[in-house]
Length: 514
Length: 78
Image (cartoon, rainbow over all chains, first blue to last red; front, side, top):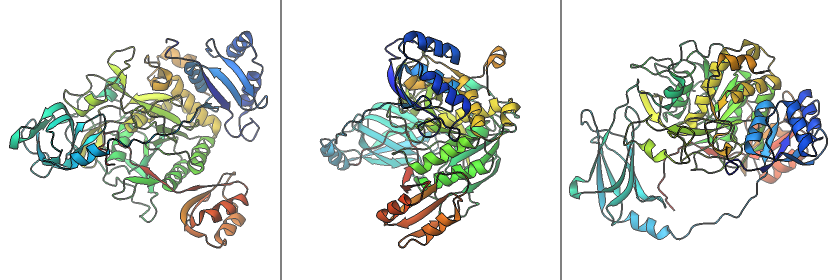
C-alpha cells in the first residue's frame, strides 16, 4: 500500500461510552489499553506499545493528546493502522477528525431543466430479448446531460412503451432501464432517437444459476450454513417468498398492524433478506449465504412509503435485540446522527448484538449515519467485472481505482470514508423479491453480504454464540468479522479492512476471537 | 408543534416516575409508548427541550424520515 493511498491522519480514540474507560462504560481490557497508549511519547515507545498489543503499527503513529490516562486520545496514524486497531479492540470508538466547509448551492442549471421539460417526446420500447414480449412497469431514465442529471423518466405501460419529454435535443447521453423483476436492467450510452420508432431496448432475462459477484466469492452455501444464528433485517419487510423462511418480527410503523412485517411491496427488504438467508436451489430458486439462519423481519417503511421514521428504526433495533438477534442488518441511513438511533446501536452492542450498516449510495459521498457510528460496522460496495451481462445498468457502476485484482472496483455509487470497516459484494446481486427475483445494486446489498458471511462464520463458533449477551460478545462477533477481511488493494477509506472471506484452517487456529 | 423521540439512556427500563412526569407535562401528547425505554411525543420543541433538561439520563431528538436507499442516478428536478 503506497503512502499516497495510506496517508497519516488524525483520529480520536474513545472508550465504548463517554470519554473515560470506567468500569460502567468499558471492559477492563479496554481501560488497560488506553492507559498503555497514554505512555506513548516517541517512535520507540510506539513500537513497544504496538508489540505489546499485537498490532502492526506503521511509522507515523503518534499520540498527540490525551484527556486522561484512561480517557480519549488524539492520535496520528494511517487508516490501515486504524483498521488494525479497530479489529483488535472492537470496543473502541475511533473517530476521524473532520473539518466542515460551507455548502455551495448551484444555481446555473435551472435553465436547462426548464428547457428539458418542454419539447418533443421520445418513445422508448422495452421488450424481452428472448421472446420479444413487452416488459411493463420498467422505469426508463434518460439523461441528455448526465453530469448535471438533466433528463426525464417514465415507467413502461403494458405495451412496454415509455414516453419521455426530453426537450429539443434527441441525443441521449445515457438511458437506463430498471425492470421490477425477472430481467437485468439495461444501460445504453450516446443514443439518438430515430423518428417515430424511437428507441428499442431488449432486456436479458435473469438465470438463477448465473454467477453474480456474491456467488463468485462465496459459491453456493450449504443448506445448514448459519445454523443457530439469528439475524434481524430492519427494512421494508421480508417475504413472503418460496425461498424465504421468516421466523417472526415486528411491523414498527406507527398506525399499522404489528404483525404485518412482510414486504411492503418495494422489494428492498426481501432482496436483502434473501442475500442473507434464501433457501432455494438454482436453477429454480436462489440461495443466500446462510440459509439456515433464523431470519427476523422488522418493517420500518410503511405501505407505499419511501421513507422510514427514525423512531421506527430505533424501535426495530430494540426489538431485534429483545428477540435474541445476534446480528442486525441496517441497509438504510442518511442525514445527521441522532441520539436515539445512536443509543439503540450502542445498547445493542452492550447486549451482545452487532449492528452492520450500509455506508450509503451518494457517489463517493461521506459514510452515512448510522454506519458512520463507531459502534456500527460500516460497509461499502465492491463490484467485479464479468459478474453481470454486457449492456446492463451495472456497467455504469464501474469506476477506478481498481484493486489488486484489476476486475475488482468499489462501486461508483458507494459512499466512502475513514469510518468504513469492510466492503461487501454490492453490484448486480441476484436475490428474492415479491413474486420472483431481481438484480439489485447498492451498499444495501453489500451490507447483507457481510451479515450473511458473519452468520456463516458464527455458526461454527459455539464458544462465541454461547457467551453472555454483553459487550464482550458483540466485540467478539465484530472481531470474527474484521479479522476475516482480506485486503483487496484499495485504500482503507474505500474498503475498510477489506472483503470478508473464509480464512484457511491454519488461520482459524491462530486467531483470537474472544 | 413537532414529533420528538424521548429515549432513556440509562440501564434497564425507564423509571415510572419519569414516564409519569412526561405524561403529565402540559402540551405533551404521547403518540407511542410501546417501548420500555422510549416515547414518541407531539409537543412544542421548547417544551421537549426543557423537559429533557430536567430528566437525567434522557436524550431527545426530532422524529425524521430516512429515505429508501436507491443508488440509481436521479433526474434533477430543481
